[in-house]
Structure formats: structure tokens, C-alpha cells
Image (cartoon, rainbow, N blue to C red; front, side, top):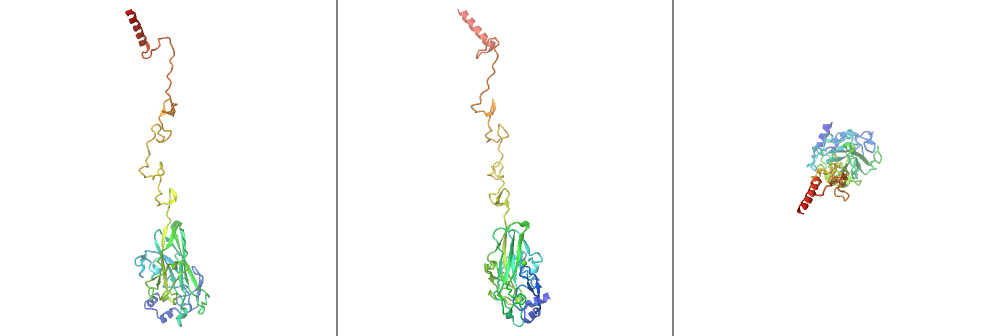
Length: 372
Ligand SMILES: [Ca+2]
């Protein structure tokens, strides 16, 4: 059946062929992954009124349309539609095999530093009325993605909104008044490392189904209002908010987000990021210098006390008589000579000591007597 369906799409759907898939039947109720809980429909049992993203077995998409906001990392395949031709990207025409998150996979994507991710919002008016298709055309279709947060956070949950003007003349018999469906995708990081997730300005595009002849097969750029609560009108032949019912008129809103991890803190100064020029291991002898600075070398120790540095105030040549004093201290005096005891012998003469001195005196006296 899947092959048959694709074949039909490739040759433009005829009203007869679509009717074969869109025969009305009673809907079931599904618990939407985001909201609100609402009636669901099968591809063979579409509703006869405009309602978006409520099919439970859309084999052209991801089976359960209520998981209509998904993400993938850029770099898994090339985009066949043109606008992202220069970027490696998820292949939006074959979403189930190209790395998109799915509800079954957890509806969460773990991000990596510096990478970009696609966020897509699937848009499908499930309505079908083989007697008068104009009764199921949705008007005022508007889409937005919000949940953005500034700064560094450990997770982000972006919510995609698809809203339309409720048509009371062709009322939703299962969910009266329903005019907005929502879904989300959560971005997290390994180890809950804080990161910044930002919309890449100018990256929002809308693509109509790749196999169909829609006006935006190769994409049309959307204003950046697509990522605000204001949202932006979508469409099929123009961005006028009018989208007919059934697959042929479905599309994707696609945009890029950028991830930057919060820098690690400096291990020597937690107030600085690790890549700050002021983040270095300080020299133990001079914290103003990095440890690998040429000036960070251990000086010769104090020559008078190896335990001290040379500029230590206690590094001085010690006073010989008192090691606790510097040698140049006024209180540093030569030690006094010891006093010898008196023994009755001839005292030493200054300059001529001991017996030698006494002999010299005796000789001088003898010479004087001789002259007389
Ligand atoms: Ca989702």
C-alpha cells in the first residue's frame, strides 16, 4: 500500500485516488504527545473538516502525526530541496530513515558543542471532502516555534504551534473549537553541561511535500517571526494562510539552531572561563607569572641560611659574637680577650714580649754603663 501511495503522489493525486484513501469513518481518540488530546484519524478515514496533525498512521510521515516537532543533527544526509544544498542535512523527504528524533526514540536529542540542528514542524491539514474540497480548506494557518531561553541552560524544550481559524460553518464534530495543535522537542547535553541554544537568523523555510507539485517544493524563506509567539502565515500557493486538505498540500517548516557549550571554568580561577588569557597555573614563587614563564625559576638560597630565600629579611651574615645579630649591627662587637693571671715574672713589653723584652732592657743598661 505504501508503494501505491507514493506512486499516486508522484503523479499528482486525482480526486478519485485521494477518495480511495480519504473515505470518511469514525475517528478514535489518541493521547497526543504534546497537545491537546484529540480525535485521531487514519489515512483511510480522514475528517470532513479542517484539522491539523491528528492522523495516527501517516506512513508518509512518522506514523503518529502528533509527534510533529522533531530535530536532527546537521550532517547526516544532503538536502534534496536546494536551500540547504551547501549544508549536510537531514533528508526531509525521507524523515523516518535520516536521523530525526521520534517519540518512540524519546523526543529528546543530545547536543554537542558547536553543532547545528534542524528543527522541523510538520503541517498537514487532515480534512477531506470528496464532494466539495473547498469546505475543508484551512484559513489563517499560522506556525511558530517558541520556548527559547537566553543564556546557558542544561536543557531546552522548543514547542511548535500550528494554528488556524476555526470554521464554525464546517465544525469539528469530534473536538469542537479546536484551532491549535502543539508538540515539542527537548534538547539536552551529556552530563547536563550548560549550553546555549539559539535560532540561526534567516534559517526558517517552508517546504511543501517534496513529491507533489506544491509551490514551495524547493522551499520558501520565512520571516524570523516564525520563531516568536507571533508566528508566520503558511500556505500552499502563497504564504497567505490557506492550506487545502490532504497530503498533497502538507509541508514542513524547517529551521536551524546553533549549540554552544558553556566554557569550562578555569581550574585556578573559577571566575574565569578556561579559555580566558588570565587562566593559567600560577608560578609558586610569583603568582603574577604563569608557571611556565621563563621568570618562574627557583632562586639560589640564602648563603647564610639555605632554608631562606636571598631576599628574606633574615638572610644576613651573622655577627660572630651573636649569630642572632647581623654582622653590621652596632651591637655586634668583637669578643673581649681573656685576662691572664699575674705570676710575678717580668710582664711582657708591648711590641717585645716575654724574656726577649727583658733581655733587650738589660743590654741597653749595660751599654750605658760602659760609655760612662
Ligand atoms: Ca516531538
